Image 1 (cartoon, rainbow, N blue to C red):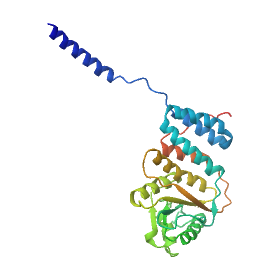
Image 2: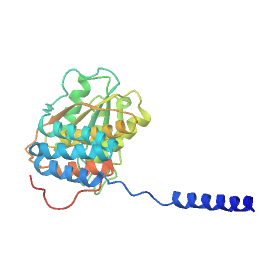
Image 3: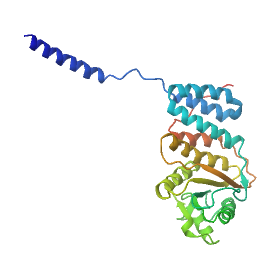
Image 4: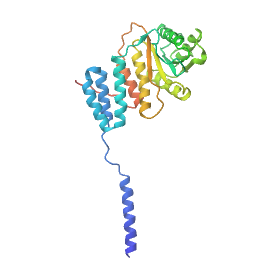
Length: 274
């Protein structure tokens, strides 16, 4: 009799353990709303919101150390590219690797409807050509998809043809032909480098003056994300720009890109108060 009771008691205890194992523990507080709030502070105030951003970063790290590490790094780079970086004009600066560990990434620009390039994209290519001649062993990634309404050509293909006709070897060129945004210029190019060009260890970004900080941020954010999660790291080493007369606030697009890269929902709501 005792054996039978003990056996039944054991079955009941096992069933209870299985039942409670299926009941989720009380959910820990998510860091995501605080990341969204921090993003909003930087979007609207940039460096003026330094104190608020640091308080939020500390709490994010308390809630989720991995996300804290990631966003501390992203915020440092976000601040740098928007407030401290001084791009080189017309050609990349001195001091970059003089071998195939460097990749020069040229960001695309919408084509005319007939597939021809707009003057601004040609200006970017002039900077790329000067930089390719200065660093003759570097790879050159041209990135941009099909934006011509009436022509079957991508930005990357048009850019590659222009460079080849001016003496750049086809063997140096990496074409990324799918992206339709600055974010995916970075995401897709980075993925191609990781997949097929393991020798590349740094990226130099070329774009227009108003756009180059945004472009650098996207490439570096992909790098930061991969570094935190233990994958291949290819940081931004430098940038160069062509001069324009465009005065464009790109902060909304920078926020959108960071959210897309990191998987954080785009923050909505009113502008926070300082």
